[in-house]
Each structure stands twice: as structure tokens, then as C-alpha cells.
Length: 435
Image (cartoon, rainbow, N blue to C red; front, side):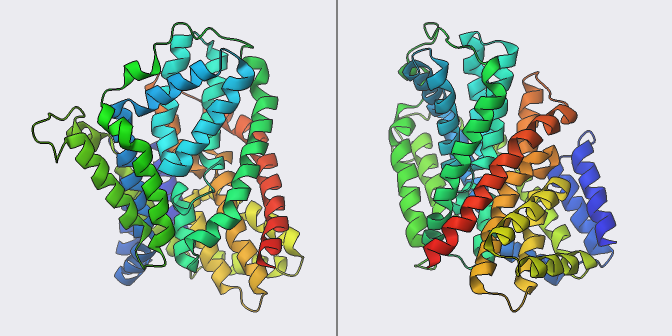
């Protein structure tokens, strides 16, 4: 029954009947599981205890991203990119990758999919890029939204669910994952260059682009943006030792940005950014999708699925660190590609917890390989990641829909080498770090 309800919910998420968002589809599946007795109210409470911090953090950072978008921050960033690149492809493409990675790290992979992608498309249109060149750069941005979401727990909900479940400190997490993120960026840049280089013009004319400062709508918000993002990063470091959930730090940053944009402390100045519009643009379906899919994943805990996963992981634990990292990561990628990375990371964390009698180093490798597999491996299929679904929706709204078959053909070729190299690097880096 649990598996049947999960598959039905995934079908609705993929199909998206008119008027039924992915959030309501997921919640509907969770309610069906509750009504049929597959899960109990106690299970729902347990799941919410595991997912609320990640969910609230994601929503808070998306509100910040929307405020920055309305202020002109991202348009200015994109224009700076075009001018700094001096009309040269060899500078433009790496800067697109790096800026996309920075947006993902600080404002989640959802921020990259929902905000950085359409902003980049607008700039490419003004620059006169061909449809193939635009496709190449936009696909690269969407691909890297998840691939480069490793560095911070808040960069991807998968990361925060993992760190909360296993009580991993923020400092230890970034010691492990920031080097892995650099590996993923370098490898991702290599495969993107190999696959898409022929589509991107060698030079372009930046002359049609206006000065970067001319697109700023709210100078006050843009002026304080880097300071607020920097303070958020500092807050993440100190949150856990003080027993403060990371979501509280993210919400505090959101309140500061709302105060700046709404001129709460300067009543004589009129607000420039329409806060109500920002509020309407926040993808609230993230909350319903996360909670619903997490409940459905938790409903599988007593089925043969988690038992089988635990047995597989137990077998892997005796094969050596490298095999453990690669095997766990690709197993997580497979699950993510089939049932989405949010239920996949929760199912795998339950399975890893149930593997008894293994070396602590091996278990830690499994934990991080699971996160890497669910972050990077989720890109193989459109259903694998919520950010991919949101990104595809953005393309459809912009009049550039992408068939799922085309997406899978390209993404599979790009994802496998990046995932393999990153997992191999984890097998080398983590034991050395612990030692």
C-alpha cells in the first residue's frame, strides 16, 4: 500500500493535472497514506520534526532571493558578468558557472532555478545569442543548480535533512563538503565545456547592454545585500553551538531584508519593492512537496524497501572506503532519479541508521555519499529534484519547453562523470580529514 500510494503521488507530480500543484499532489498522497493507516499522526509528527528546519530555511532564503530580484540585484550581477567577460566566451561561460554556484550556495538551488535562470535568459536575449547558445547556457545553469549545492547545509534541503538527522555540526559539514563542491564545479565545468562548447559563440558584443547600476530599483537593498548574506553565513557557524536552529538564522535574515525593502525604520521613505508581490511569488508548494514526500518516504520504513537497502549497505561496508562511497552515492542517485531526492535521502538515512556493527568512518562516508548522490545524482531525471521541476516550469513559462526525453539524454551524460569523480574524491578526502 505504501509503495502504491508513493507511485500514485509521483504520477500526479509528473502529470500535474490542471489546478493541482506538486505541493497539493504530495500532501494529497500523504493524507491518503494517513487515511489508509499506512502512517499515523505520530509518524507525521516525527517527519515534521526532521523536515521543518530544512523547509523553513528554504522558504526564508527564497523570500530573500525574491526581494533581491525585485531590487535589481540579479540583473545587475548578470550585467556585470557580461561587461567583465569582455565579449569572450572563455570568460563568459566560467563566470556563468561560478555565479550560478554562488547563488546556489547562498540562496539554495531553488533560488538558482527560479531567479538566476530567467535573469540569465533575459540577458542572453538582449545579447542576441542564438537559440542553441541560449539553450546551452540555460541548461548549464539548471544542471549546476543541484551539482553545486554541496557546500553549506542550507544550499540544498537534502543537506540540512542529513545534518539534522545525524547531528552533524555546521563546521564539520563544510570541512568535508566545500572541497567536494570545488571538485563538482571543476568536473561540471569540464563536462559542460565538452558538451556545449560548440554551441556558444566565440565572441559576443556587450555594447547593447546598459550600465549595471542602471537596473537597480532599490539601492538600499542592493547596498546591504552582501552584508546581510555575509552575516547569515557567520550566523550559521554559531547557530549549532548555541543550540539555535539554522532556520532561525535564515528567518532573521529574511526579516532584515523585509525591513530594508519595506523601509520599516524610515517611515518617511516610501517602499520601492512591492512586498505583496514578493509574497505571491514565493513557491509555497515547496512546503507541501517536502512534507508530503517526506511522509510518504517514512511510510516505507517498515517495508522490504528499507530492509533491502540496509542489507545492500551492510554488504558495501565490507568492500572498502572507495566502494562504499561510490556504491552508496550511486544507490542514492538511482533512488532520487526514480522517487525524487527528498524521499530518497530520508529512506537512505533510515537505512544507514539501521546498519549496525560497521566502522564509524564507513558510516560517515555513507552519510556524505548519500547526500552527494541525492544532490548530484538527482539531476539524471526531471523528477529527481524539485529544483529541476521548478526550472523546467520556468522554461515553459518563457516559451522554451524542454521534452523530458531530451533532458534525460543530456543530463545522464553530464551527471555520471561528475557524480563519480566527486564520490571518488570523498573516498580520498574524508578518511584523511578524520585521521
